[in-house]
Length: 316
Ligand code: G3H
Ligand code: 13P
Ligand code: ZN
Image (cartoon, rainbow, N blue to C red; front, side, top):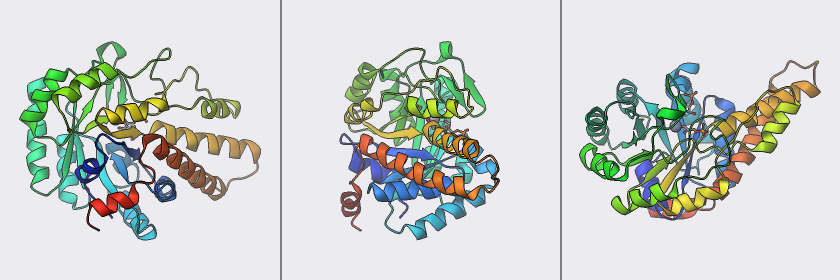
């Protein structure tokens, strides 16, 4: 059942975070649904602009529709990740997305408010939730690359003003993370002090954490042992997910970790079966490994075993 992120956040707020996982193909969709049903968790399917372009935007929608039929008990939102204004309108008009992210965080502050407000007005007219972003994460967001030095943490006073003026339903805050596999130079913690200040100014308002992959070092070691060259990677400490959730983070975005699972499975498979060229055996292994990974993340986020209660809260 497709619901809005707003509906999921109402149940999760202050208790746990809902996992938001990016998908690009059928194998990821199968693993995601399987893992969320196995762990009895609500979830958010994220589709980036790049994912919509990868095959055809209609293909991903059809895959998700089919997965919804295969797993009728699943409860999830379908969300556009890092949308620009035109893509947000396309998704709002698609009749399929229940949530969009307008990312105008690279624009001057007043512009970010104006763009977010326009998108919010159009989305709300159709009952769709809107996530916006304030502050800038380091790393690469599709066509936008933010150099480390230019990344800046969200200003709590500005966050309060932004939410009031833009009308958005949730806010992605920069609290020290960045996208991709190389987040930190050394071990670093999330900026909980910034989260606390934002929560004080925006009580009960859902916050979002991008760049939340943990970049498991055992996964990276296996990739490198099978011919990969991913050196110096570092991710978010998984033990910081729940403390962040208690401070109002209701959505935690994880994409890179799923790509690492894919890379490990395929590198090891073809290293161990150099004569094979059928992609289905490693594809099947990936689906099961990704499902296991998703279930393990849902436990850490606190969303595991919430499904029955979420259903009840929706009156279904
Ligand atoms: O924030 C970026 C997400 O990980 C999506 O990545 O734009 O390469 O699909 P992508
Ligand atoms: P990671 O690169 O840490 O997985 O972050 C994904 C993300 O924020 C998608 O919007
Ligand atoms: Zn992101």
